Each structure stands twice: as structure tokens, then as C-alpha cells.
Image (tube, rainbow, N blue to C red):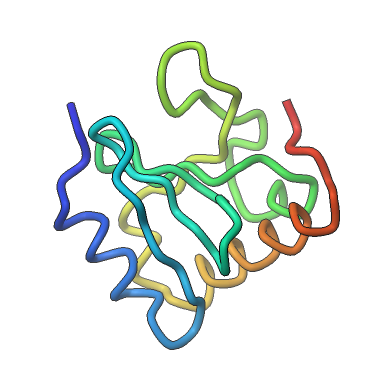
Length: 107
């Protein structure tokens, strides 16, 4: 099932002002960018944030799950957690900072 444009728009709108993110459609799903760095994927209308050491403290499932078959493990963020703007903003910003600092995503 592909992600709806509405879901991508909702994420961008929800974080607007607190965390600058953009999305780009790719193969029916979306890549989520924070200031030019891919930090997450939207797959099947769910947010999957790249797994980094700082990001592990933000989720209940620290082992991660693949966003799609044969993918690396990502940290899944249930859609109901997007409504607390401070939480996903901090999560995405800390992930982007770790990725910019050269930290390889955890496997």
C-alpha cells in the first residue's frame, strides 16, 4: 500500500515552524528530509525514522523494524505521536544532527 499524499502533507504541516522537513515522493512512498538530509521514510502511511544512537531514546521499539521488505531497521513512529509537535521535532532533529556528524545509522 502506498503512502497517501495527505499523510506526507500532514507531517510537513504538523512540524512546520518547529522542525523544517520536506518530503519527496519515491516509488509510491516518501523520503523525509531535514535541511537536505534524509532522516526518515513514510511507508504505508507510517513514519520510519533512521535508526541512530540518539534516536533510540525516543522509541519503545529500540530494535527497530524494516520500513519495507529487505530494508534496514528503522524506528517506527505511530501516527498518533505526531500530534505532540515537540516530540517528533526533537526526534527528527537529533537524528539529522547524528547523520550530519557522520554517524552511520545503526543496523
